[in-house]
Image 1 (tube, one colour):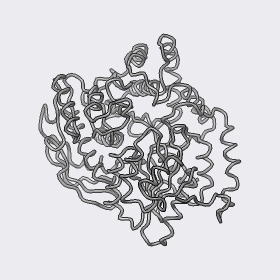
Image 2 (cartoon, helix red, strand yellow):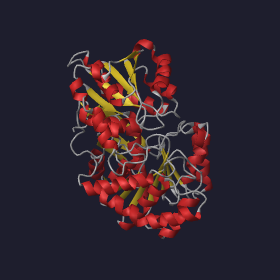
Image 3 (cartoon, helix red, strand yellow):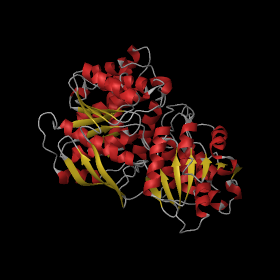
Image 4 (cartoon, one colour):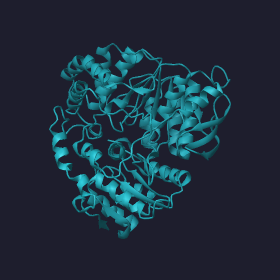
Length: 520
């Protein structure tokens, strides 16, 4: 195990000379969020990350048309957004829960039940929820429906969580929505044993924004679980369950079946349930719940699925079998077999929403489906943010997600040498995650993101040494140094050697790396 030279010893140390000054300046900005606020998300004005994005030697920006919004350019708007973020940060973070929909139900009541103003597609599962939600949103939009999408956590900016018409709401609308519901939030706070949490308030904001738009359909991703998740005050006419595996075991259960029992809570009477491929015990639980709810079920591999797929430049070419027939020549600009399966699930969900498979059997218009899938982006999911060497970001944070990412990297990139940068949360199965990546990483740089939940780099290194061996593990406590070290290691093979870097372990780590690698 080794530690790279400090930035002050680096030959390009002049680039880092003002780092501490920038950190101090960023920290002193008015309205900076409380560092003891929500633990699940990365603060959008993280001082160290903002500093690193201006000092990192090897910078490269995201592609044109970046789906992730940046901070508002208008200082007044930015100040207003920071104030909202600071107020939200005083509430329970997303990992502190009192399992109940009592508070969110009370908020919906005083707001006039905005979530009843539009039909919804509700998505749960362990992995693939956000990518699937984005695909569903793209398909619905391509068929001229006005969409609202609510997903979590965000990659970089809190406004990402609430989207209208396929794009995150702007900062002004986000602030306006919060201020509109704030008096009602405070009313509910005063009447309940516990104040509304960070996630509950954001959920209320999303449902209010969708009603105000108004949207034709909402695409809603659960935060955690299903039955007691704050989003579960909607009556989704379509319930989607992406693959279930072990995650949040302290909250949801220690087996796929126990976790499935919680997630099955989104299945409502007479809904259509779209089931991705599941472990047998999880599938049994989900099917039993569907029967009890008199819901219609469509299962991947039986009623719909992936017929064929082949790697293509910039993604993959698919033939999908939907509820209404086959869809050939579908280009998906995302990597990995798991994304092809997410596409099949998304297509079936939209078909079900339009009544295909129940009311009629004709397929959706093929050209529209092709156009929709070709437009999909999923930031932080095997996302290339730099070339020479290639740097890829993936938000895998559990073993199942890591295995899918590793398979996708093998298939799509063919690196001759891959360096991993891993920053994980303290409550995750880090050994399982590292073991999934061990076959594809030549070396791994362990680090930490900026949140209190981040696993200590030395503790992470101790696990990594057991998995990789001491000679393949590098420790860099600060993320900008970890990226620099990984890029340097990748460059050791020369400019045309085909080496790369994969940054992974947490949505937070990926979001902060994305900020560091953007063009300043």
